[in-house]
Length: 141
Image (cartoon, rainbow, N blue to C red; front, side, top):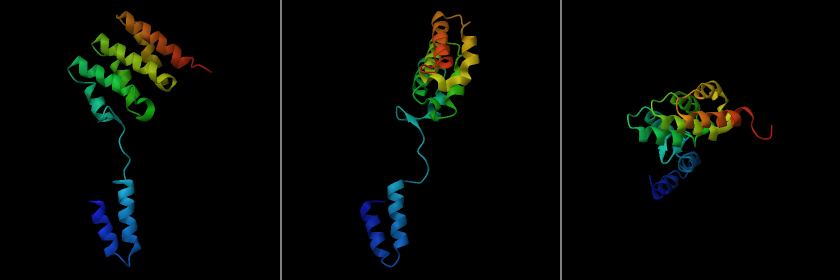
């Protein structure tokens, strides 16, 4: 509906200020529901689904994208924790770095990060140690 149509509806409702107010409210607020969180133009659900893609590059991009969401979506941190068991070391590295980036808000990841200290990949182990340090001993505390 264009602004001209809305203006016409308001004029047609000369005795009903309620209709005009409702139309104006619709244009000012949109459809009324909260907008989903998006990253790189795609909703969080897209990236959560992409964590299971067979393509390693897509999984890694999904992890990196979700690291920008953090606590804004309650499904993100559990999904990143699950990704610490990915078959690809690069994806596991990205997941640990994502949790490091999220920081103290990723406290529920501590047990999985402790397990990652035993990962066969040296970078995963190193990043896990840094993530644990940041999460368990946040600066200023």
